[in-house]
Image (cartoon, rainbow, N blue to C red; front, top):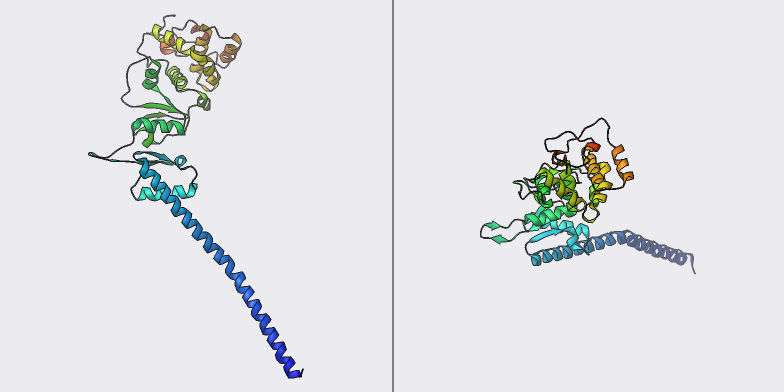
Length: 289
């Protein structure tokens, strides 16, 4: 092979290799870009599919409350985005964080959420108990219904749209209340108010309180929660426990938690037989039962 042909052949080989390298480089640069585009397209498709399923369920469900838990099996971010869009479109109404309402049209305009249903929902999100006159009513101490609802909760707040704008809310009840039933919490609230929400006579108020304490181990449950209660409530629980014949050992620990120089207003429970042993003040209600 002549030298000229050798040079030409060498140049052709170099050009071929250079071209091959350029193709490899182009492929390396394009692949990530194409991958990102494919992923974005997939996410967009999934988001549209989820939005369609959310709207379908809401339309089929009619008037009701909706929460994220009602869309189990679907992507949480996609559901949140879909609900946000439906809220902006006026299809649903946002009542509080994670709670939405689908209304129906009536002759008087759009329907409003059922108060009982939303208060139950509030109870699922935070521990909620009847308080004040409502607690006395639940326990049978009065037949009155309060003009304004009154509740107590272990949370720092409750959504107003769930419990009502006029509801009186007592927040930050002790964590020990979370293990109590509705009636347990109502009874502790009743003791906190010194039984002054009772319409019964002082004697019947004491009898009713003692009867409630003996139901299904209630006194023992409240005794476990007593350490986080105000001293007045601990004193009342101690007097009740002594009258019910509870073990002296547990009552001794409860008594030791009280300041021996303090005197407590037992209100309509001043007639408890051992109220004086538990540092009760003299009261106009006093009539030993």
